[in-house]
Image (cartoon, rainbow, N blue to C red; front, top):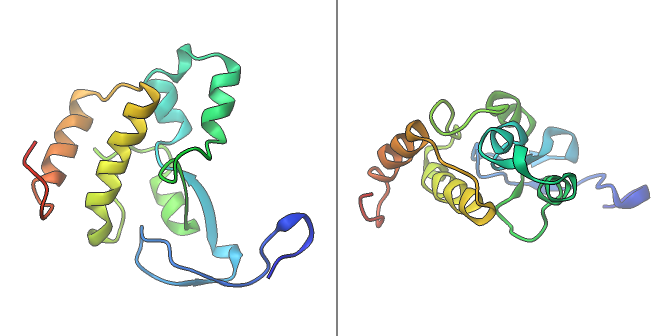
Length: 131
C-alpha cells in the first residue's frame, strides 16, 4: 500500500543481498551499489555538481540504486568488494559483475585491490569465464 507522497506503507520485499524477505518498508534502504564515497575516490571528485547529483539519483540503470536490508546497508557502508561482499553467497557473482558494470558505465576507476577481489570472486562463479 501507498501513503502520502507515494511512501510505501506495507508490503514484502526480497532484497537479494541477504536472501530474506522483509515485511514493511522500515527494514529497507535504497543503496548505491557503488557507494558515494567510493565513487568520489574513483573519479567522481572531478565531476561537476550536476553530474554528481545525477549519479546520486540514478534511475537509468536498475543496478545503480537497489533496495537492500537496512542491516546489510549498514554493514556495507562505503566499502568496496575488497572488504565487503553481500551476506548471501548466491548473490555475490551478480553483485561483483554489477559493481564493475556500474563503475564502467560512469567511467570510474577500479583499483588493483578491487580488480583482484573481483577476479577472486568471479573464479567462484558458475558459467563465468575466468578473468
